[in-house]
Amino acid sequence: MVYDDHIGRGRVLKIAIGIMALVLMMAGGAGATKFIRNDATGGDCTSFGTWNAATKTCTMTADLIETIQIDSNGTTLDGNGYQTTGAGYSSGYGVNLTGRSGVTIKNLNVAQYYNGFYLLNSNDNYLIGNKASGNVYVGIYLSGSSNNRLSSNNANSNFDNGIYLDHSNNNALSGNTANSNLGHDGIILYSSDNNTLSGNTANSNPYRGIELDYSKINNLTGNIANSNKNFDGIYLFSSSSNTLSGNTANSNNGNGIYL
Image (cartoon, rainbow, N blue to C red; front, side, top):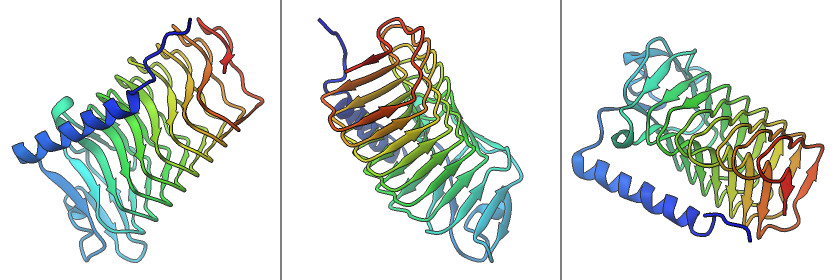
């Protein structure tokens, strides 16, 4: 008999996120939000960084304690190694993209938010070289978001999952790490199809390294899922027509690869 809590997990996470959003609206938000827009000052960009109108790039020059919300398509947020830090459960999202496209976010550290990076109905965006750690639920969360590229991001030591794709298709995840997340998995795909996972590392998570639930036609190549503590390295549940090649899944407490 195989025990797991995958049934309903996607729904539970959605409900929790919805409740969190309602709480924030009723309370007026967990704190001020910094907005990035394609205007003369980049929205609020010049209050914490420099704005290049020609390239539509905001480059951070200081740490923040507020959510960063991207309000214009085709903009770039260069964290420049700086960090935005929340106050845990009541802090909403570190970076919020809702209905955005063509946005690049790079070199930014996000910690101690409800979700670190949150993409909702946002397509054709790029997350490169960011860090998401110590967030209450997920380091990098995609919901209903397609054709995004996540590369060389670090989503370690979050309190639930490292990277979560929920009803998100045709995304490419390459060279990311999702290690030592405290609640569940390193990387999970829930009802998410036609994604490519290549060269990612998902080690030492309490449940599984990489998990696919109700997801099909995904391609997993050259990923590492070692030493996950209670279950499997790579786990597929009710998932069909996926391709797994050249992956490593050693020293897990359960199976290496389990279908």
